Image 1 (cartoon, helix red, strand yellow):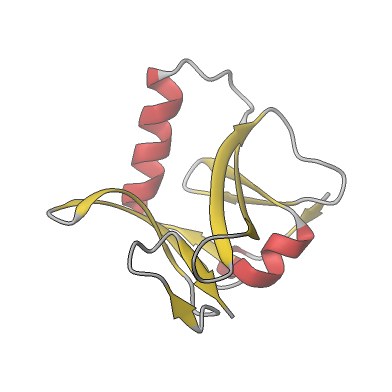
Image 2 (cartoon, rainbow, N blue to C red):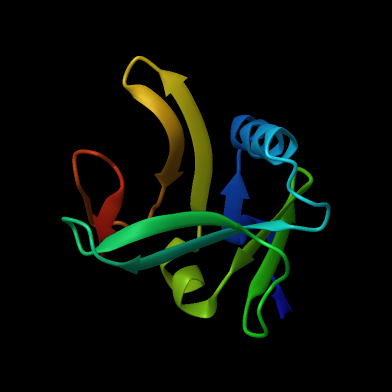
Length: 115
């Protein structure tokens, strides 16, 4: 498990508040972290993934920001370096948004990207 500088992945205050709300609402046990990643798929090549995990895996990087532990595998960190995880509840919908400076193209829904 590696620790990484905070500038590698950023989680906004609004996203942090939403993650904490989900944790409380679903009674997710203390110590769990938010697994952030990418996988192949989607209309642009890669899709973002989010989920809760009890503990980091051996090759994970752990980022702690705004009281939230983020678990990121090495492959995903390569694509997510510099990414800001935000949350929106505006007119265009409600959900988590990845503002990824590494994405050369994105799809219209914002759920997939290409490099």
